[in-house]
Image (tube, rainbow, N blue to C red; front, side):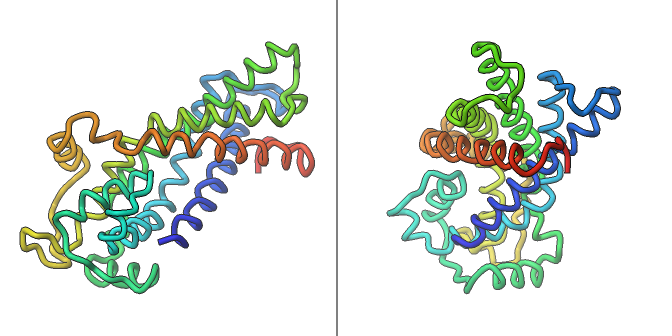
Length: 265
């Protein structure tokens, strides 16, 4: 299941940053601001949410493939649990499901479309949409807020003058904000994508839809462990996001400084 997360990460970051830049351009156009004039924090947050909307459409199929591949080796996942929401769901699924062997991403796509049509690839889309819109707003909103604080405290007028280490700190804070707000939704989404079309101990057959929606899946998770069940593995995920989000934003800002001056694509 490694190739799908890598592809998903590249797609997500590419769409998010492109969408964020273009959303800023549109907001400035609507509000009649010049391209050099900064947006308000509320407008930056809105731009982040708009960027997340576009990302969700392409990410849902990618993450469905990732989740199905991660739960097929339930024994390995049970003994070597990872920090992601998908793997936390895999561990709980491991206790009441039989193994399903996929040869790879293409096999998952073929099997899903064969049994459930194109709509099957968008199982859990509502969760992905909520996560990306809310998470995108938090990610970019907190990043811009932190950068604004850094500029004021250092008496700097332009974000381009902030040193990389300060950009990294701002990016790290953004990563914490993103995962803190989006992790429960991601848990629900991952449960939907892994439990809907797999063989279960209750006798459901492959291809037999269980009929669980977003709200009913959330209710099941709550019944299994209360509010804490939505945050299982969240701490490690946040810790992992601190360096990765910092690196992502530093890379983005340095590339923008050296290869382009426009705020939109």
